[in-house]
Image (cartoon, rainbow, N blue to C red; front, side, top):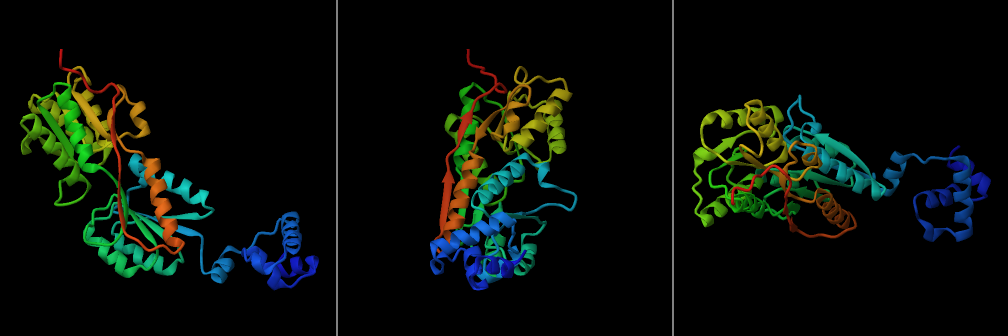
Length: 336
């Protein structure tokens, strides 16, 4: 079955059939359109997607770029990344588009790929500001960044209130009577998500008169096994900590395991708070208290902005979505 056969059965030209397939209904009467659509339905005809993309100058492909991935890494290694990708895919699918996922070590690798593939738009997850300019200069498509701090660039970005998240993390622990707190975090750079969370955390400690110094910071990447080691280091370090704040839930999971392996009980011996409120927080024992962001809302807002741009809108926008504390079982109240 092809367009010529459908045109012959419907008694119309191939151009008319093509107009119906490509949604150009203004050039076809309602009766003719119904007749062609009935034939397509009866015969199970599937149009060639690549051919349609060339005619309409659109591919119905949306790129999703996950940066800074090692050759042996997968996005499943980080539950947050897996969850945001799932939410983006769900949104893209709801718009009758298709997701093209690409994990890269260097975000600039995507320039060559997008030059070869006719994607209609793209999402970029967590790009550092130094590389945003190069990406914008090299790729001329609608694009939305997530969790990206690039104040000097005109971009559309959807993130969360990272500063407030760090602030709430410390304030919550302090409000439960904790005054000796360790912070487990990736390396703190000059700008970005971790810097904002750290600044908020530090501000809350300063306001409450809680002493917090660099020796209370434990650095780790977001690998579970490495976070286990940090938990063990804290357990054997003799720092006298009553609570640990982690800048991601995945790290909190690993830290908790490391503490347990050293015979420490959470929260009886030491309390732990995470960040992100992943679904896995409910599966941990004890269930993990966390700073919650709405990942599904983040994907929806990013999708709304991207499709406005695909529709012709031209704007720059930096949206920060609200966060909150979700209290569970991993933080002990020291106040009698």
